[in-house]
Amino acid sequence: MVVDGRVGFTGGINLDKVYENPASTGIPPDDDTRHAYWRDTAVRIEGPAVAELQKVFFGTWKQQEGPEVAPAQYFPPLPRTGVQTVRIIASSPGEDRPLYYISLLAAILSATQRVWLSSGYFVPPHQEREDLYKTARANIDVRVVVPSHSDVQPAVYAARAAYGDLLGSGAHIYELRNAVLHSKLTTVDGVWSVVGSSNLDRRSVVFNNEIDAIILGRNTASQVEEILRQDMAMSHEITLAEWRQRSLAEHWDEVKARLWEYWM
Image 1 (cartoon, rainbow, N blue to C red):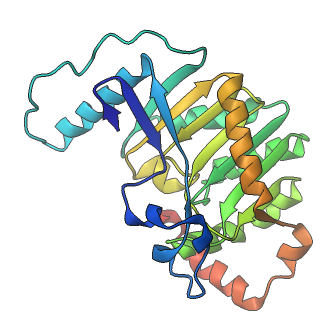
Image 2 (image 1 turned 135 degrees about the vertical axis):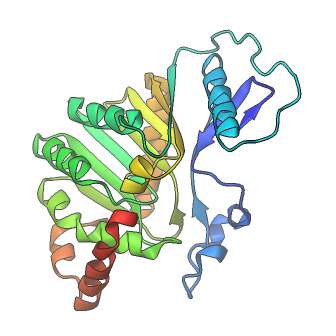
């Protein structure tokens, strides 16, 4: 969303009635996510980066053959308003070099202290899983917040099927259980952060139109870390012993989900 060419928003939040459900709703007994509380995050952006969001809108509008827009000052002069550096990365199907995916992997592999992330749909491609394992094995503090309830529940089962190697490498996994987690956040070493629409899954890399804001600065990183701390506090941490003792029914759900993992 871009307002008057001066204020921009990006993140996981949709224009949907589910966001009217209060936090007290939690997850209904029938697991109906349409009547559950949705936990999501977006970022408000001011300054020169807003023009990049506006360019993405017009590029997509043209690609979808939208009608000609009325003349207006869509790109007003925008002075720098803070000390954070913002890069907008848009991605679309068929790109030879998915810049957001490349940037994310580079940040993860460059970490020296911690990598904390959250994804509404956590079905990472093979290379991303390998890089997370490698980072955790290097004694980097890797924490992943994922949903236990989703509007695409097979994605949860597919994620759980891959918990073993991630936990075995030393990473920590937290399942948010009293809300539908839909946010997409990553922060690295307290300075590199991203808020956007891309999930940690193949669909976001290969099939979807996505847009993400990569932000360099300790102020934003500290806010993202605080959001993730709150989510962890409301979550259940999965241990390797617990994962190994899951039921045969859970195993079967994971096997079925993995058959469709390519399309998730």
